[in-house]
Amino acid sequence: MAKVAFLVASDFEDSELKNPYEAIKEAGHEAVIVGTEKGILCEGKQKTVTYTTELAASEANAADFDAVVIPGGSAPEELRVNEGVVSFVKDLNQNSKVVAGICHGPQVMISADILAGKTLTCYIGIRDDVMNSGAHYIDEEVVVSQNIITSRTPKDEPAFIRELLAKLQ
Figure (cartoon, rainbow, N blue to C red):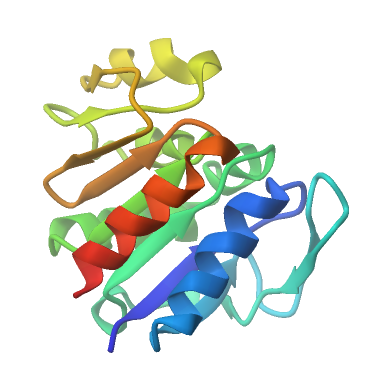
């Protein structure tokens, strides 16, 4: 079974973490909450869920993981400026591991400089940032481009989860 990191900081979009996290666990995979530091309580933007980071990104070894999921909300703004987070995402991508982001999640991918030549989707508010990073943007519920999986908003979660689980098979 796969080991999946969920990159988290406070003000993540609640359902964009909760629903993929639960689906990964229900499918028998291991889900690990990774943040800028270990032991930090992170509350969702809607205040419906909280998670405590189990591992700091700077301590996470990409070789130990099969995928990373980056939920949206405001959390990617904090995550993308953390050197450990950016290095972790870069390392996963360099090893062709799954890098999945929904809504604002691709902001971390932009900072990791892994989007050139890829096709993806995202929250419309960061569309120009995605295109300026060298990616081709399309407005679809889910886009799979090699090892990168992206979706736009919480309404796209079923498609996002479907493609994530398919990649982990």
